[in-house]
Length: 319
Image 1: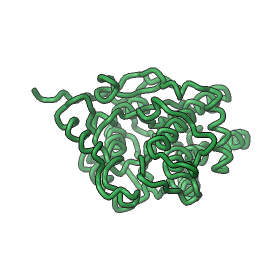
Image 2 (image 1 turned 90 degrees about the vertical axis):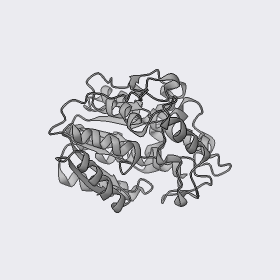
Image 3 (image 1 turned 180 degrees about the vertical axis):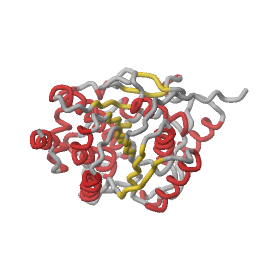
Image 4 (image 1 turned 120 degrees about the horizontal axis):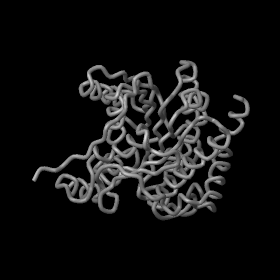
């Protein structure tokens, strides 16, 4: 029996500007294509221009009239994040949709960003925190929806407050889970503060379930010489329609969270299948580590200190 492919209806996004990180392949590429197909102008901030051009070409082949363009961004560098913010602010176009999708997963050995943060914490969370800060005037002008892509890895675990950068004892999976918990707590706190302060921004969370993407593929730059055994198993099961999703279905929760009129501010969206591993998107109960409001406030304060980007002062200065 042929596999039934889940899909959603995306509202008309004409005249909307969307920014999607990590859209040069995998889930992000399919998410960007879905936004472009609905008429949005899609900005792809990428670290590798060649890979970005190939991604833009793929989107245009699928959506011939797509309005898609590249900007430079390395989330492992706060200077690069600030430069992108300056570039987009100079263009003067409001941002209506921001999807914090980019990420790295479980390097076998501890690595750091240009600013000395553990790589996963630095890219998956701090880079996106800083990006929101630098884009805040544009997000407010566009009354934007911000969707942050977390992970099933955020289901358990905690913030390692005694060693945020995993300098004493690096554990790749625990560090990955921390980065996604931090991003999720930030996304929920962003929505709370926006509602309390009248910022005009709504923020929610999504997760892609499990699908064969490049997160666990061979990455020599991450000291991973070949794809992991886990990815091989995921690809095998996904191809046979067993429990898991595909890169196409894995993009749907974020696409739904970022565009649907039914997606709630502060909501959490993921696959609806068994174990929330695959299937069409649906609202889900927040994972326990994401329900801690005091922890979210601490993540916010700590992220401001570590990045030097103060979202609160930016709001006061902007009125």
